[in-house]
Image 1 (tube, rainbow, N blue to C red):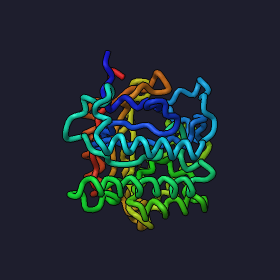
Image 2: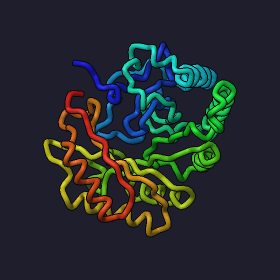
Image 3: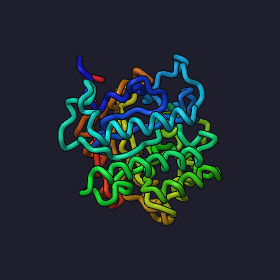
Image 4: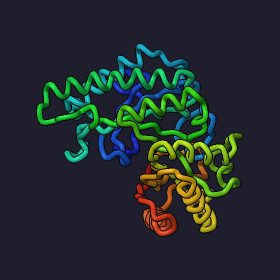
Length: 301
């Protein structure tokens, strides 16, 4: 059975260990992923995570020079269009054949990387370098530097750390966007899904503090757990948490409601039906007046 392109997020591309291009359903284009956790260590243990943590990774440490070389080469392959000559990407629809972003995600929480601010700055420099090359060969593109985003996909657990605050500020200066995970309305459901000792209140406070500085995107994955979708009271509480963030001065420019698209860590986790995703989007819009959009899953994994 073939795997849909948006469900194929393999970490390897021509032998790369840290950088991997994917067709992103949420970015509506090609996203170049940067994996700052090749050791597969994460401070969350989400029940829906697709990372296989039962096997030890061959790569245990981030080699900065190798990562930057892979990023430079991958951006060039995507920007030139050569990527669409490869078997994996030759069927990408014309409207999605665009380089949208560099995304810091991977096999764990990227902000736990001890030199997070330094690696963000180094990757921003590579982006500027590639943008200048794009500009020199495509005169119609006036500002390719601003056209390529830098996206941080994060659980927001480390936003209070000084080196992470500096990293977020570097993102702000380089067309950065923060996608912060918020997938619960209550403490009980949060611990059921995320399986972490980090308090739910810490996540909420961190998101609020960061959103007071710049607008954030909220990413919320909902699913069936042991055959059951989240109960209405939980979804209402989720909307309450969003309202608390905005009432406290936080800026939320988009709420992404999505569901399982790749094989999860636990067999009792399954995608919501399309109409269930639509219903949550409708609820969020009605209860919070925020912009919300839904992304559907893939029952075939």
